[in-house]
Image (cartoon, rainbow, N blue to C red; front, top):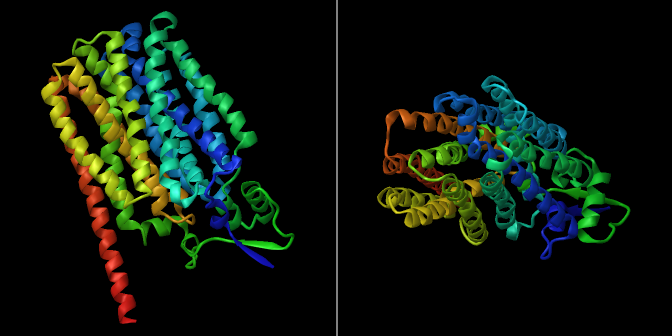
Length: 448
């Protein structure tokens, strides 16, 4: 009987049509996630005027989805490791799509808050699991780059939400803009149901050999011998029979903790900016078109940044690439505080911050997918995302408090520099922990 290494089939020099399909579908899931996230922030000023409510009254609406995202991410990891990535991705994409549409029919802040909470559960569950399955289908030499490019769909979706709002908000109104943002992922959920393959690593672990064989034959472009069995790499197996949760909280606890802290602080800043930047800029005197387009520049910069980071993550230590991006973002936040009165320099600074901060945030998903083996990857990636979303919740609430503190535009950017620096410190500690662990392992081998 012939034994085939699953990763040897996937690690091709040239991606197969099926691998490109997984990549493209992953990109679209990220795009729809970002589109939903972006639209609600961009329609916030119109919602304030239409319903005659205050900014603090809107804060629970903006943060409700973030609470749902945190819950969805945390519970989806164990579910995906048990029932499969595809089932979780399809069902949660359909969930956030339908409830996004319902948001367009909300008549009160309470209704909108409930709909946004359920929407968030779907959003939070879909993103880390689509990142996991894309990572598992990409060749190891280009895993970070291609997974990062797929994740750029999120940033591009936020930017498109800004462009959509800039040109349709005044003519159609906030409700119809939101509904448009929900119809698109409904169509995508149907396509995912029909076309997205299950993770081959998951299928092999669950002894679903026939299905894994069919998928791998499509990847390599030819049939296997009739008598064949599949195996995973040594790093992808669990010889201790520990549950995925025990692995994350045991062997990978230090690295996980630092990823959680980094993601927490990063998402705090990211969601404060994406949720409140339009309102902050409008309060500072920018016109509707100006604040929509400037706010859209921020996530679009993340697309460029994540692309460049993904390339270098495959060439060198991936954690170092991201940690230095946070350090540069910290310095840029300080610089932006000095140039906030010049709209041209301010716009350029926002773009560069997006390239570094949003790019690094997007790159955390492929980084965590590379950090964990397939035996606990869904849990590890999802939990980092879920715990990070707690930071996003605080970011949304802190955004509303900014107006009570009456901080200047410069002062806001000085404050946001602090959690960005903490993200850099967290990844630095992760690298130090890995070096210490590798050194201890090397000494142990030498003594043996």
